Length: 136
Image (cartoon, rainbow, N blue to C red; front, side, top):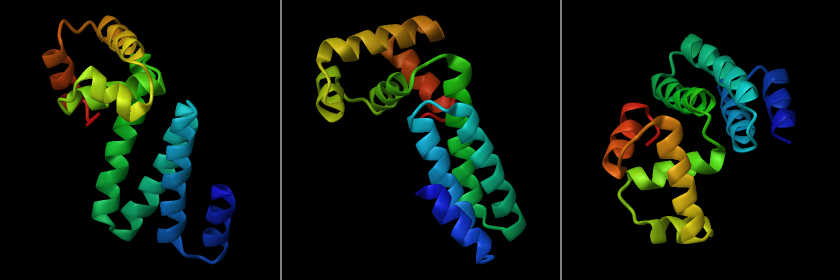
């Protein structure tokens, strides 16, 4: 459906809306774990936003691209990234579990995997990492 919307905007020669559709496609790709597809769509959107001089949209795309690349390079799953991002906002495991509708034990498992994969010693280090790498 999103690709159809992109095609319609593209055929109507409305580049800004076509680029916004590509950002939505990238987010959908990222949500299902297709990081290469998400990166490709974000690159295409970035190019259009640069040509149009759409600075706010360009900044947003750059932030999303950073998250996609970090996810791909860190080896974290999409769910681990979601847990990680919530952790970095300072919420408890219980609050994370409630928001994501998973058990606290699952949250703890995801965090343990995150700490191991990224070689982080604590929640504070994880929070710093998340901010430094644009995950929050």
